[in-house]
Image 1 (cartoon, helix red, strand yellow):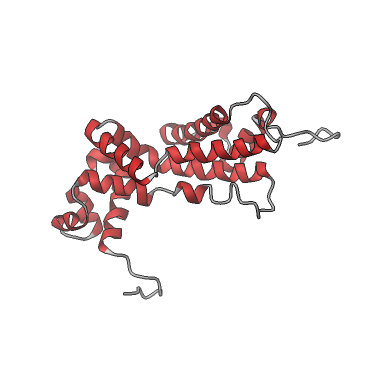
Image 2 (cartoon, helix red, strand yellow):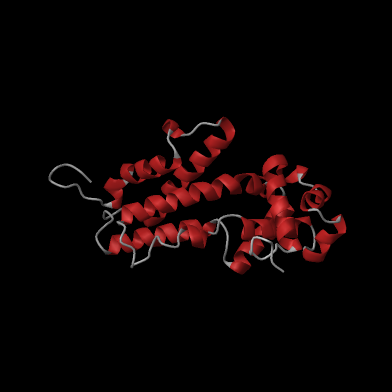
Length: 213
């Protein structure tokens, strides 16, 4: 079935996930009860259990299906056909990660505070090879490739550099969420560029004779 706009109509499962995402962002995991999720989605509470085994199953699906995909965030990071310089591609990936963590933090905070839910989530991440760990893997691999091409300084650890970059993104998202401010009052695009420029000595970006990057 299609909507009047011509786009495929959302399935009940999609509506439930969309409603859950809104409520978790607004009320946190504890406040996003199955009844509230059902009301927000416009379905009977019992309908949730036709699509999800229980609330933990719904929340894990939310993480895997509604947060920005790490694969999408890093889709063009290592695209050999891209005409953008590696630093520009890295900056674009950092912007995507800031968006990811801005949406992920309220969900992951609730999951990490519940031992049983955390165990289930870890297992699902392992089974599907999806989740926040993919960000570190993709970034470290990109840096490792740069190391092989002489773009990364010898002795610099790709894994540590990846952690520094991810930490910068989580800091931006967390500070914005908790205080409404950002590091240096920068927008995320400018911040991403400054992060890359700050780490440029380790990332091996060379300066021209004129002193510019």
